[in-house]
Amino acid sequence: MYLKKRSSELDHLASRDHLTDCYNRRVLFEVLERDFSQLKKMNEYSILMVDIDHFKSINDTYGHCTGDSILRGVAGILNDFARQNDTTARFGGEEFCIILPETSQLQAMSIAETMRTKIEKSTFDNIFVTCSFGVTSIKFNAKTPFELIEQADLALYEAKSLGRNKVSIWDQSLEESRLI
Image (cartoon, rainbow, N blue to C red; front, top):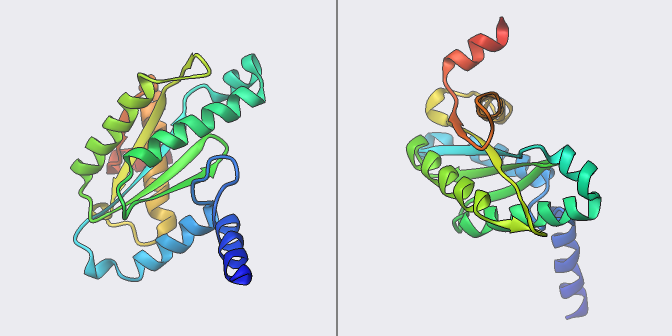
């Protein structure tokens, strides 16, 4: 019994980000690789990239303990709005990636907008924060998990360039403008 419990604890520690309790980047890529091997069976599949706006200035102004509290709070909201089959992972720093299986780009935009609004209306240690969201879908013909993440990341960059606290969806023009 002890060994089974200990093994379960170790599995949890190896798969989760210790600060946010979201999945870690390793698990994110394992899920993406597994799902990409079965994409022909899936009708829809979308991902969100999420970035806390102006996070560096929050850390610089209020300190890293407050920054950690904000990371936990935002992660909590992302997890609260994620559905049972979704995967929420800390991508790095103040960025998160959410896998939305069987979810169209329009549904993904709606989910992102709901999350964005909830975060915008919340306070963390009496501090208001916002997040920017990038959305993409397999309907845009990504060939690899890395390409799908790159699409969502370009859409995230677009949301930030439009003033932050926005949701943007990838389209081909984002790729073309990156090459200029």
